[in-house]
Length: 271
Image 1 (cartoon, one colour):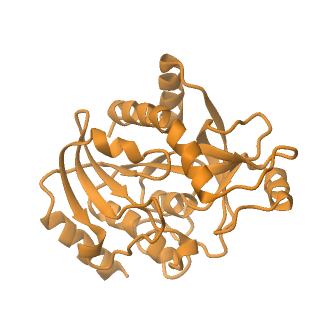
Image 2 (cartoon, rainbow, N blue to C red; image 1 turned 90 degrees about the horizontal axis):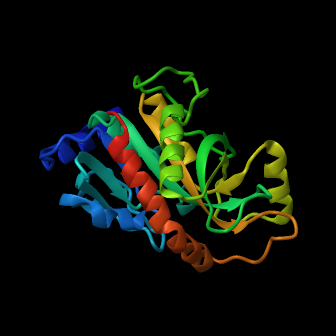
């Protein structure tokens, strides 16, 4: 696997003329950020050796390089999900490639169902921690020497970046909440009983991505900041039937606010 990672990184490096240390996974809520990247150049996933191709509606498939403000960045437009049929090694393959390319900080976003009774649809939740409830662990198998066999996860999400994000939100008058994200395999939305269980676990929101990528990023020594858009509610008495289209619509409404926070945070973050 290491040989494939290095081969992929070598191919991408040949097409790069910048040296970013910041990467962004443009998940739900961050799609419009791509319009703010200047001096842009792109590589389609289908042209990259060993790269999976996203199959989900609403997820494009290309690496984008350029500047966000005055910072060189690398962005993934389209991520890979376990429920698409990929293995965890495939889901997290791009993060390991990022490490080979010299990425030091990773920003991620997602859509999530809110289980905290204080949450409302459209809220932006800063992820303070997570619970991994995927059936396969992304570090299962032979350890790659990017990190230790048993990585520490006591600070999966950078406390300093969380503090800066809260400052930025306060400056701009944007409501944010904080919470623990539960990562599950999907693709079904949760039953009321599952929402109740995940809340008992200590979760504030639940979604189908992010956790594997964050685990591998931490193993690779990459610091992480994550944010969720609360697109539906798993709170007793507020649970209604939900569709992918409704989730996307709720995310689209919150998108300008998440974009504003993330853009400012990326530019203020030290490499």
